[in-house]
Length: 183
Image (cartoon, rainbow, N blue to C red; front, side, top):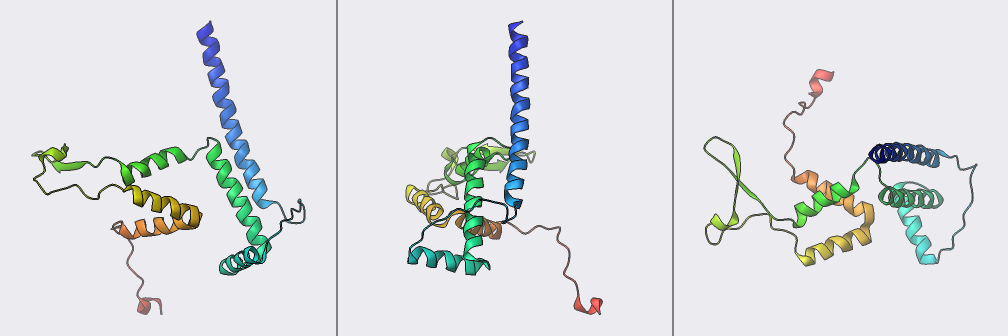
């Protein structure tokens, strides 16, 4: 009887968690689409230097300083909320995978006689040979952390851009359109 009650409680808890995630999505969608005329006005004070940074960034994005502040504040709030509560996107799993790629133990693989991949221990490598790429050093990790602190999401976008450049191009791309065929 106790096992049935515990199982029923777990099912109810899982169901409530799904409802909360769905509700959070709906709330977030509402938050992002509320017209500017039906809301609360918040006021902030900026010194001349801070105002200059905001205006410069807003110009770069092609908007007004006020809208830039609004969008930046909402984005920051959404990012914090997304990482604070469990949701469909598994931030933790992605972070763990990235951490393993950057600093985890390197594995060397070779094909055996049947063509299957098998791990090769580093101890069988000839002297002077090493597995590349090497892991991140402490200094490089500090640089990464500083880049994220100073550049935020824009820095991570830059990192992703550079990763895309390193990946091989897909082979199933369509050929370019010949200008003559479009006349």
